[in-house]
Structure formats: C-alpha cells, structure tokens
Length: 318
Image (cartoon, rainbow, N blue to C red; front, side):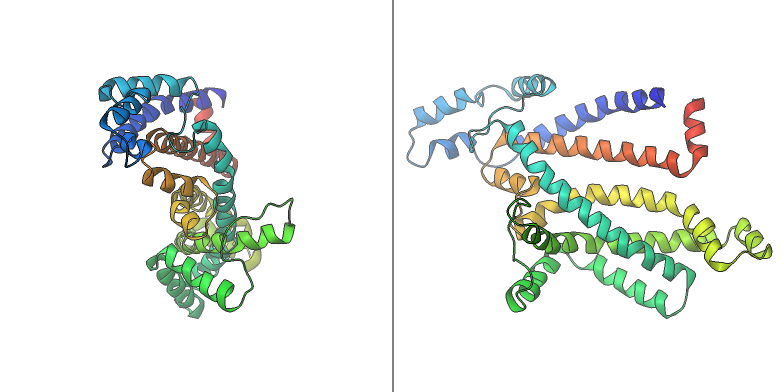
C-alpha cells in the first residue's frame, strides 16, 4: 500500500506541472491590464508602469511563470493585488466553505440517487422506473443556477422558510447555519442525485443479470438478502466512481452556486478575482482546485480496495 501511494504521489508531479502551465497561460490570456485596474482611471502612464514593475508584470511571460512556479513550490502564493492579503491565507480560509456545500450536496445526492436508482433497477420497466428516469432527465437537463433562483423565489421570497443567501456561523446560530446551508446544498445536489440514480440503476440491472444472482435465487435466498448482500454490494464500484467524479464537479459547480447564494467560498472568490484581474489569486485558486481533484481521485481509488479486496491484492502484488 505504501509503494502504491508513493507511485500515485509521484504521478502528481507531471500533472501539476502541466496544469500550472495551462493555468498560467489561460490567466495571462485574459483581456485587460491589472496594473491599470490597480492604479485607477486617473493614474498617469508613469504610475501604471511603476505598479507593473512592482508586481513583476513588466517582465517576459517565461520569467513571470518561472518566478511564480518557484514561489508556489515553496508554498508562497503571493499577495493579492486587490485584497492586499496573502493569497494562500485567503484561499484556504474560503476553501472549507466550498468543501462544506460540496460534501453536503454529495451526501444529499447519495441519499436520494442511490435508493431511487436501486428501486428503478429492481423495477425495470415499471412505474417507479419511469418516474425515476423522468426525474433524472429533467434534473440533468436543467441548469443548477435556474434551480437556485427558483428555490430563492419559492422558499425564501414567497414562503419565507429559508434565507435567500449568505452565511451564518454555527457559533452564532446552529439553526441559522443549517437553514443557510439547505438551498445551496439542494441546488448543487439535485443534478448529482440524477446522475447517481442513472449510475445505480445501470449497475443494478447489470448485476441482476450475473450468474451468481441466479445461483442465489436457486438456493432459495430471500429477495432482501439478495438485494443488499449481492446486488447492492456488487454495484458499489460504479457508484463510488461516479460519487468521486461528482464531488469534483460539485466543487467546480460551486463557482456558480456560490455567486447565486452569496456563499463565501472559493468559487465566489474565483469569480471576484477574475473580474478584478487578480492574476495571482486566480492562479492559486485553480492550482488548489487541481490538487483537491487529485486528492479526491486518490481517495476514490483507496475506496475501491475497501469495497473489493481483490483490487487491493493486485496493487500489493505490483
């Protein structure tokens, strides 16, 4: 297991290096000059040049990239042009808020999508299957931000059950914290529930066609035991794969959802930094997101070994 982890961590190096090149090039391709934005509309050309030299924006792109990468390897994310704070401090202070809604959205998606997919797979062609498939089609086809705005209009404006947005600290009010979490969680988790429903349904149908299921039925095992001990257990690998992918997607989708609900996460910070052309902040956020995705993939791979011991044995033999 230790050798496997070391191999995986070493594989991260070229991925992170390539990602850093793509991120740096994409950010530098954004229109506008951050030096002019920092200096203000009434600044002279000399003042703009001084600011550009202060932040190293007057150097060539390869030199800027090399300097940025060198600092990043040391854990130095630089200082924000706009917030005048350490980028690393600001990014990692916002990251837990994004992870919170992504994790709660994934849990809600699992709580809805897996049972619904299991019921649809077991009742293939029946009413429950048609209802679940219709729900999945509508949820996947509809943008998340539309669900978010609809939820604000219905549950916050018209009914007054939930706050329209913002964040309430758990130390200030436990109930307020939970209520503020409901709308962004459900909005982000609805699409995930539909995707998990389809993945679970397909895995269950495939598993039901396996020979060991027919053998279990021939031995006289009860339906509930067959479903939970054989069907669901052997459907966990594709479900785990999809859940890991969804967690990464939800972190990406949080960029829009956090803006809709004024949630103080890394997604909203990314949008504000792009608008303000805060190069260092945008680059730091994107690299952190790449690293989070790599960690998620590693955790999913380790989960495979826990679900199916044969996978763990193969890894140990390599």
